[in-house]
Length: 114
Image (cartoon, rainbow, N blue to C red; front, side, top):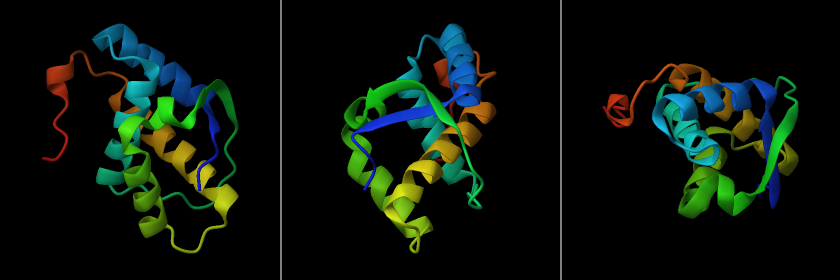
């Protein structure tokens, strides 16, 4: 469902670099956390266009072992999207979560699942 090569937006990249400087988490690990943070907080992508132009990496690098879970969550949240739009939805969730997390100062500040 998600393409084999994926990018994030400039806005998300900037936020995730700030997070990396604060915590040491790499951009791809930060993107995973950002996606799940956005899902957990109830963000919903409304079909807005998003420019995914930064840091092209393969799907496995972005999603790690969580690729099936990410795709399942996207299908569950957006059951009627066309295949190409799941990529935009993923990118929007990374944007949203990255903005929430960018000021985190250390890893112990994450309270995922609470």
